[in-house]
Amino acid sequence: MVARAYTVAFEGVEALTVEVQCAVSPGLPAFSIVGLPDKAVSEARERVRAALNAMAIALPSKRITINLSPADLPKEGSHFDLPVAIALLAALNIIPEDAAENCVSLGELSLDGTLVPVTGALPAAMSAAESNRILLCPAASGSEAAWVGNTQVIAALTLADVVRHYTGQSPLAPSKPGEVVRPQTDKNMRDIKGQERAKRALEIAAAGRHHFLMTGSPGSGKSMLASRLPSVLPPLSAQEALETSMIHSVAGLLDQGGISRERPFREPHHTASMAAIVGGGRRASPGEISLAHNGVLFLDELPEFSRAVLETLRQPIESGEVMVARANAHVTYPCRFMLVAAANPCRCGEMFNPAKACSRAPVCGEDYMGRISGPLMDRIDLRIEVPPVDFRDLDLPSDGDSSLAIAARVAAARDLQSARFEGQTSMRVNADAAGGILEEIATPDTEGREFLQTVAERFGLSARGYHRVLRVARTIADLEASSQVRRPHIAEAVSFRLADAK
Image (cartoon, rainbow, N blue to C red; front, side):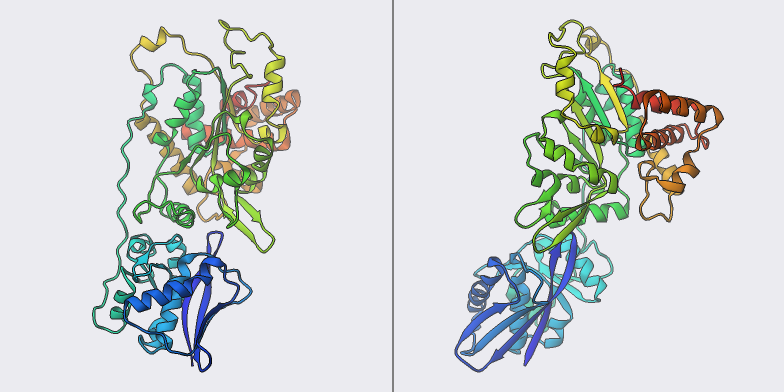
């Protein structure tokens, strides 16, 4: 007789169904796991044996074989402990076979039978919902998985609780989604003295999810501007929150099983490796660009990042996804992020400061900023110089719009874009617009078209640069609630595009 249980194997953010088959047959006593398991899965037999002994369940003196099907799919992780135990308990007639076959389970077992939380409960719940099965998981993972509303989630503290649930002795109540408290922040755009042009560019970037580069002397406020960007971004939509949380679930970053509506803000150090930024490693985990999906990736000191890392960003910026290639698999992660970068104009950082003239200008700046390749720079929509702030301005009272006022304008512009791209799967904001859709929504008036053609010829804009100017101009028009892209919108978009053209 063969008993069956079900679990998942993770390939990127996708959870692939794995059938766990258990056969107890006559022969020399043995307990083996086959089906391309890794070391952690192979060690599950010892954890399962110890957990059953803690429940006073002795294994029979027979040959126990566990097969993980499909056998050619690599199986990684300790979450296979619980499904192996479920299949074995069904084969021993301790729990009903139909109960084992009607659930997708995952969880690590400690030696005393306690269920230890594992990563990936949210994608596993999605897989269970697609196959019309119940999800069985550790208690600490239940509130995370319960956010998938079209499947029942049963969360247990111990393996003994699972047995009592399936034998009807003490049924477990379905889990409820974890509550997430919106974090309070005291960072406000009004804290920034001066820098009105930078704040304007930041508002445009937030409204259309445009990539943004700030160049300026040390201490001019580049990092301060970037740190206040989350305060003006709209919350994640329900679909975006689910997409982002699935990535964070696989990475084990969900806090207390709750799904947050806050947009991710990732700021890796410039010494980060390519695997840390793009994704990869031994188990092909998501990198910073995927963890920033639907949010912000802030790269401070951009020229200090490895040239190989920066060049690898070019394709994900365009496509919104990254493929991590391995010898046995190709894993794809979504990474539709907003790139915000900051850089000093030269190695000493004082090329723009008239009070501290750089002795090697302009060669110093050309060498330093030359680390950022032309193709990567061409993908950045907004580029501005952030001048030093006079110390006398720091004593002035705070002025300008608050984060709340800017956030309201950004939200209104995003609402226009949501209505514009309704029904489009690959386009959500103006930065995604392409092809005929871009021509339809961002065709400028006659004066604007003539002006843009003149600029394109004068400065040699690439086709990509031409289209990115149109996208930014469409966002500027949205901030003014204008249905038509006009010359002033084109002119402002061009001024940010050509800020570094000398």
